[in-house]
Length: 147
Image (cartoon, rainbow, N blue to C red):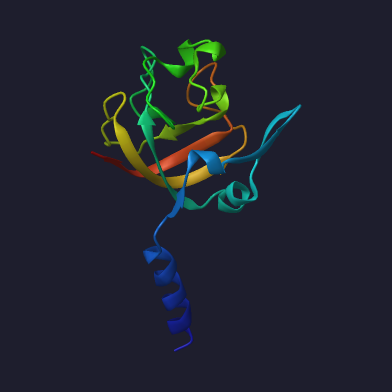
């Protein structure tokens, strides 16, 4: 009988929906060291979130289980662009998320609008791509193409 409350707690957490997150909620301010994560982003670190954005075109030879999600569609691979070529709303390399797809999930077409549900990871960590550094990672559980 003592296991019933624990079971209810575990099931409640498993059934909880992901926290919606927007690109403009990742950072609170920019300092000389770069952008600082917002209190909301820090609170959601390691938690399941849902983020909508656009699939950026990949670089040739990029692993098929990776995609870069941006706030607006881009015409070319973000790692291939000069910072001056980035749209103002994207604000350079700081407004994108590197998404790692689970095995067997097909990579959506470039410029597709998608909703990604997965675990948010903040901070620099080894990326599965050489020469790529991003402080925002999303370990995807589901990717849904939106109209």
